[in-house]
Length: 567
Image 1 (cartoon, rainbow, N blue to C red):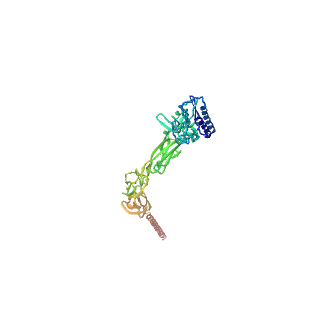
Image 2: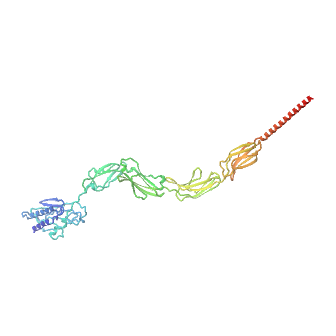
Image 3: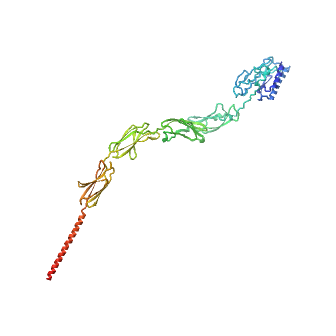
């Protein structure tokens, strides 16, 4: 019976050359356990068939040796466990198998010592990446005479032919090669942890939890790194093979040297914001490897190489939250958040402004405040451009020391003081003060045109203080007013004056309502030169006639004397 079973097994070895799975084979000897790991052989390999046949033949030879003593049926068993292939989808642990296997022993006649071979169930596996093969040995005794051998097979097999036609026996589980550490950790992140205290500022490096250094000094190299320091480390793990992953550590600059500050221009602070990273110290890192990210006002994150970042078209007096990070070699090492409130908006326009005069030198202005935030008013009405600063609570103001009969253009605007002073739109009104006495005429001048006529001129007054008027000239002899003249210009010709008489001339300007103070000047007329000339001519004529009469008398006397002599 035993011989028949051996021959039957030998025949199936030729019918199905892939009935055994390459794994761990145990060859029992007297008092010694030896384990041999066979290389993986593809299905249907003739070498496997020959090896299996030889093994079965040797078993048959030992059983035919009549001189060997048969061991008792209670002898120990050797178990060979093979890891499930990657196609298995379930994991089941048997009492004699490895995890991920399910074995069903088949026991042949128990009158001899038996050796059990565990065959994995081909339909159960935990995952494609199964653990590498394990070998589990039990104590085995080998006597001079071996008894029949018992093979374990799936319980569903009812005949010896079906035992060796199981699909699991024809399945070879290849060992998955381990990747290189360089490939495994190609994109491993490097985390730098900054430690700050009063005595030192250092970095430490953290990798994933399954990363190990390849030397005892490696762990020390990952601690107490200074800013901008370069170190090279090799990464390894039991799940990968050399070459190790070589990483160049470049520590970032000291994050305490970087400060995020507000850089907005005061004039634009009401509708825009600006952030800028400022470096407060020197460092030896390559600044070209520095990049920055900014996120403000709910807008998407923006990455840039520029230290400065701005946002415009914001709402005035509104709070915005901004966050920013500084990266060195694409690794963040400094970050800061800021809450920024935009500046005040320009105030609105004062409402219902009204202007009026109170006198020739006073005016009055009233208004209503704008419906916005403001801190003060500016009231402007002077020709030199100067303005009066008014408290925000005022709604009226009296203007004093004004010029009479002068039109004033009043402007009023609100102002708010934030990062910059912002003025609102101006409200305007006009008014004119009342008329008043004009000032004196200037530079009065009197000149004699003829013996009894005078010319009086003057320069207009500095302030007319009223509507256009005329100039008035009064001619006085002593306190007696002799004549009055009116003219639109200060240029008078006074005629028909008395000869050789002193006159007083008073000139003033009169506007439509008031006349100014007079300005006076005195001058005398000359004698009548025409009358004198006539008198002299008359005197000459009379003298000439008298002389002629005298000459005639002399002639007549002389003629009479001559007559008397003749007689």
